[in-house]
Amino acid sequence: MLVKRIKKLYAIDPRSWEHPADRAALSAVKQLKGLDELVKALVSATTERSLKLMSLASSVKVTKNQFPQLNNVVDNVVDTFDWPYRPDVFVTQSPFLNAGVLGVKEPFILVNSSILRNFDEDETTAIVAHEMGHIMSGHSLYKTLIWMLTNISANMIPGGQLIASAVLTALAEWNRKSELSADRAELLAVQDETPSYNILMKMAGAEDLSQVNLNEFFAQAQEYEAQKTLLDSIHKILNSISMSHPYPVVRLEELRSWAMSGSYAAILEGNYLKRGLSEEQPAEDVKAGFDYYKDTINNADDPISKFASNVGEGIEKAVGDLGDKLRDILKG
Image (tube, rainbow, N blue to C red):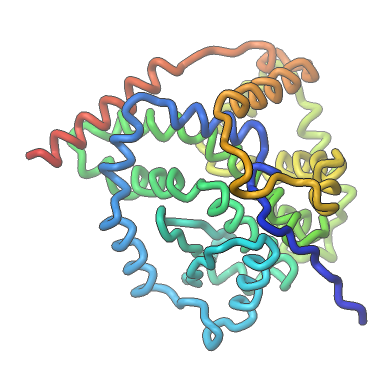
């Protein structure tokens, strides 16, 4: 049996694969007034240490002697991306098919135990690479902020629940788009589309892949996309507005489009940005995101896609108000 050889992506810069909507949304989030203070108040070195200690106390740390197969998967993913930092990985008891990242200076990966029961080695590699994608793109800081606002901070701040909800709404759109970038990272690590598609089918409910058909799942994705009346568009927005991830069928179509666009093949041929050789260009990120949304709207024929509203000022005020409340508490 031939073993597939994975191409190593030497010094690859994550900007090589990041989704334009992710980069634009993150650039917009970083420019929100008061966000820097909010991040400093919530996500400190002490907090990061606390999260790591919580994982050490309640989960199983992956090593050569604990989950050795998963440990080998992590090593291979880090090597494929030629990444200088090998994150700690913890397996935590949970029936939900999920994984995540937390931390800032030394982010770490949490893998739910159900992942190891329900996914084969290639699929598990894709899941680990997905989380590595978040780390490499610098997503872990804002994902940690979201986790803290959801689980801790709002309850500590008098009257802060409503404001925290507004901040979470501001971060939610970026958070969903960040998953599209991480999906691309997993494809680059495995260098085979099938595991990623299988993951999305399983997360949608196909525990037994022998009972489903990938072509039918793609047809289902197209059926969803084809529902474009005004009422359908409203339902799509309302159904997804509180979600942390795009729907599986949406991710399926996005990933296939990128895999077929030529950009994926170009990276595997060695045509990609190298780390440290070019500076970030926020204005270009925003323009790329604008072009993406413009093309999406121009190519769509549903009523909602042709209407856009700007809520930036309200979001900035919410971020600033929450930061003011936190500073008052810290001073008191």
